[in-house]
Image (cartoon, rainbow, N blue to C red; front, side):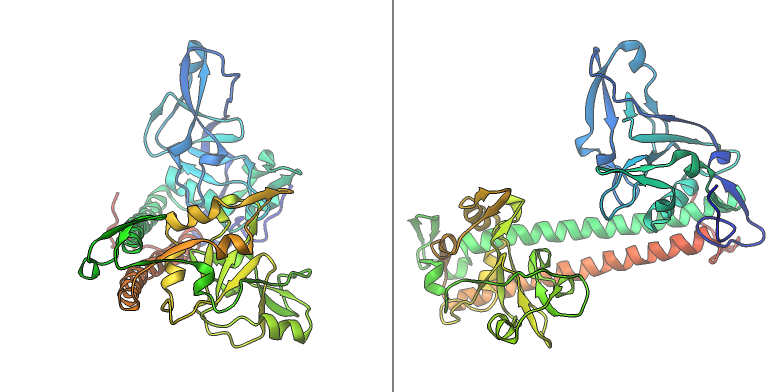
Amino acid sequence: MLTHRFKTIIGGIPDDWDAKSIKSVITGQFAGDWGNDEGEDAISVIRSTNFTNDGSLDMGNVAMRYFPKDKAAEFSLQAGYVLVERSGGGPEQPVGRIGFIRQDMPDTTVSNFVQVLRPDPEKVDAEFLGWVLFELQRTGIVERVQQQSTQMRNLNWRDYQRLLIPWPNVTEQRRIAAILRLAVEAINKAQAELDAAQELRRSLMKTLFSEGLAQHRAGWQETKLGKIPSNWRIMRIKDILIEKPANGYSPQSNPEPPGTKTLNVACIRHGECDINKATYVDVENSVIELLQVQRGDFFVLRGNGNRDFIGIGGVVRDEISESMIYSDLLFRLKFNESEVVPMFMPYLWQTQTFLHRLQAKAKSGSGLWKIGKRDIENELVALPSRAEQLEIVALVESATLTCNKIKCKVESLQEVKRSLLHNLLTGKLRIPPTIEVPS
C-alpha cells in the first residue's frame, strides 16, 4: 500500500478540506480499444501520441480505425470525461499525461494505452479532477505508481486509483477550475500572438533574403539560385570565410562539473547557441586555446541521427567569461566582415530555402546523417551590398526582438499557471467568496 507523507499525495491541505481516493470520485471508467481494423465504420482513436504536456489534445494526427457497426455504436467520448495516459512516457517524461474532453465527441474512442474516467458530478468537478491528475504527472509524483519496461512506462492502475487527492467542496472546486481556465486562456492567447509573430518573421526573412529591399533594387537577374536583384552577387561560402570550417573535440562528456564547458548538439536551436545546455569534458589547455568559444561565433551542426537537424546553425550571443570549447559534431564558421556584416549569415542560414539546399547534400552512414566541410564551403549564397545587408539585419533583429518579448510573456504566464496549480490545488491560495469568477 502506497503511503502519503502528507494528507494527500500532492501535499498538505486546509483543515476544512478532505482527502479522497481517485477511485471514490468517479462513477466509472473504461480502457480503450485499438481493434483489429476490420469492419465498415470509421472511428477516430485517440492515442498517447495525441496527448500534450499542457492537458490539451492534439487532434491533428488522430488514427482512424474500422470497427463492426455494433461495436462502433458503443464509442463516444462525452464532455467531462478525463483521459489518462496509462502507458507511454519517455526517458525523461513520466507516464500519466491528462486529456480533457470539453465537448461531446461521437464516433471517437481511445486506444488500449489510454484510460477514460467518468467523474461523479455529485462529488467532483471534472476540470478540478483533471488538474489534480495533471499535477501528479507534471511534478513527477506519478513516478511512484509507475512501472518501466525497456520500451515504455506503465501506470500501476490499482495503486494510481488509490492515491489520495485534495477534496474541497464542489463549489470551491469549480472556482479553482475557473481560475485555472482563465490562466490557460491567457496562455493560449499569448501563444497565438507568438505564433503570428513568428510566422510574420519567417515570411519577412524569406522575402528579404531572396528579393531584398525595393529601394535598393535596380532590376532582376537569373542565377543558379534563381531570380535575384541585379545588384546582388553570387558567392561561395568559402569565399566569405576568413578560415576553413573547423570541427571541435568530443571526449566523454558529463552533464555536471568538473571540467571544461562544451557546446554540443543540444545547444544549437532556433538560430542560437544555448550555452546553458553545455556539458563538461576533461581536456588539455592546448585544446581549450585552440577551440575556445567566443561571443559572435557561428556553429553548424554537421552530424545527427535526424536529417532535419543537419546543417542548422546557431550564433553565440552571450558573453563567454569562462573556458568553453565545442563538440566534434559542430563546425565553427568565421565570416569575413568586409564581405558580410555581423548576423547577416546567421539569419540567412535560418531561411528554409538555404537550409533545405544544404541538407540535400547530407549523406547517411551507420545511422548518422552528415555534411562535410566541402559541402558547406561550396554552397552558394546571394549577397546584397553591405548597406542593404545592414538594413536587412536591422529589420530581422526588430522582428526577432518582438518574438522574444512575446515568448517571455508566454513563459511568464506559464510560470504563473504552475504556481497557481500547486497553491490552488493544495489550498495554500484560497479564492475569497466575494470574488466573482466565470462559471
